[in-house]
Length: 272
Image (cartoon, rainbow, N blue to C red; front, top):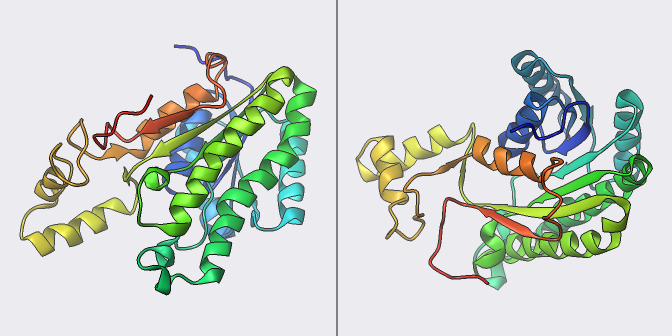
């Protein structure tokens, strides 16, 4: 299917690794000019070089910390300057180290960790959207996709769950505000996803169980396992990228202000 993306211009935050990098790769394959954004220049430059060589597309790296309004505005302006406009924003950035310190009893949660998590994932996404929207309005066409996560649907992670849920609310609110300008806004919930870090994590788990990494994954994702799903395996980052590329495309007009869950059918709850 031709997604109608050739010649479009995109920003992908958190684009130097993991799901963000996979999304940048898929957009570049579809003919999109992509600016990947991260805090660390060395990793960013390496990822941009790799993706450009792999896809044959134009992928540039722009250093920015999304907790800084000034850095975000400068980054978006530079991407628009280099590409001659901006059509797509994928908010995939997250706080350094995630939000692991907010897991567990409330007595262990540190205020600063909570605030950093929200300032990066939620307010950072809001800053990026605010800076990108004028360019999308000028083009009369835009797509904003927030990469969130299923912590929003599960108890246990006080900051991760709350900030992921807030990204869904943001998507709905902005969709209502921006639809008249030709801009759609949506949210994607990945679950546990295969990325560059997965082999070492599976190897560690396998060693603890005394089995192969393949068997460890099979046990973990069996439908009746606590973290199991319907497809009986981990979802790959590329598969989350396929979903995101469709939402970023010219074929997705019917979807705005919505949440797409990309977990391979994890969980038993039914949502209407």
